[in-house]
Amino acid sequence: MPAVRDLRVLLRLTDFRRLLTVRLLSQSADGVYQVALATHVVFSPEKQTSPAAIASAMAVLLLPYSFVGPFAGVLLDRWQRRQVFLYGNLLRALLAGCTALLILASVPDWLFYASALSVTAVNRFVLAGLSAALPRVVDADRLVMANSVSPTAGTLAATAGGGLAFLVRLAVADSDAVVVLVGAALYLSSALASLRMGRELLGPDPELVQPRLLTAIASTARGLLDGLRHLTQRPPAAHALAAMTLMRFCYGAFTVMVLMLCRYAWTDTDSDGLALLGLALAVSGAGFFAAAVLSPWAIGRLGRYGWMVGCAAAAAVLEPALGLPFAPGPILVAAFALGLVTQGAKIATDTVVQTATDDAFRGRIFALYDMLFNASFVGAAGIAALMLPPGGRSAPLIGLVAVIYAGVAVMLARWRRTGELV
Image 1 (cartoon, rainbow, N blue to C red):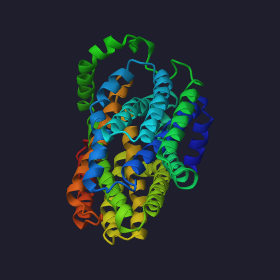
Image 2: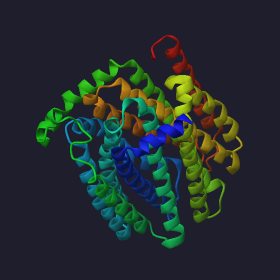
Image 3: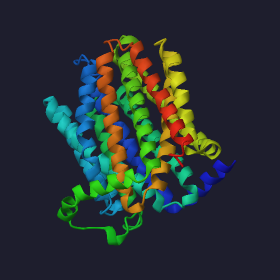
């Protein structure tokens, strides 16, 4: 099969393998850390969680750093990306250790969130840098395959990290602090793995690097405007980002609903709810893996935008059909399907952005991409908070998500037909 042949070629590329290793370790640590936070905020026995509380937690953790994204991008276009991975992951290991201490000390919630916010802030730099660096380690002909393997493998690593966190929490130590320390160890491993790559390998080009931090910060506003202007001059990238943002919103709303169902509707104990949530995340991760396998073939036959249309249209049909019974079995199938279509659309979007934007602007564009991801997920949590009852069953929310998916499919098909997507 061509996809298998291309995958074998990719894995023979030493620099690609090393960058992939950094991603896998970093994102597995993200999965551990995020599950630790979720269990501490949502599944602690002393907490009575509501959709509004979940929305508030997501806003505190994600929304402020939606505004950091563009600043991260400007700096990524000036700092050596290898160094960002090294020092960023070292800093996250230290900050995660601080979070563990705060959990043990039972400090006020605002101090706990401040620590979590610090880890999330650094995460913006690392994730945007990983995507911006990818074209430096693979050739243009195999960029689609690289975008299937690398981000999807990272998502699977995050899912596996989440599974490890559940295992540690349920089987080894009933302590969120211990789980956070496992994440800190993985962040440290990612930092050490980045040392296997040369400092200048991942770009940006030396003449674009500004070693003085104050100089880079002073140019942030101008750089952000330049990045936005560059994006507006690339309609395919702008349209793909708009569609992906809406699909991310849908996935976020569905995720909050599943979390509430696991917490209150399907189980009688917190441990059972936590185990069921872990199963739902694992099934969704299997959907991500399926997207990595299918997307190169589908993009080859349908084109990038044709594949995005197919993903959105399939979600518009499957999400209400499987979600409206509000039963664990159909919902788990829906989790797989939405994982597949969301990740499949993301693979296509990543490739569009990478090929339609210049390398000098790519860090800024991917930081904006990351910002849109955060904002859409927080927006989804806010809408879910308004629409979900305490038990998590909401037919109107299911209907809203289906309508948005259908709207994305129609919008992309129209842009494609009128030649706005090429």
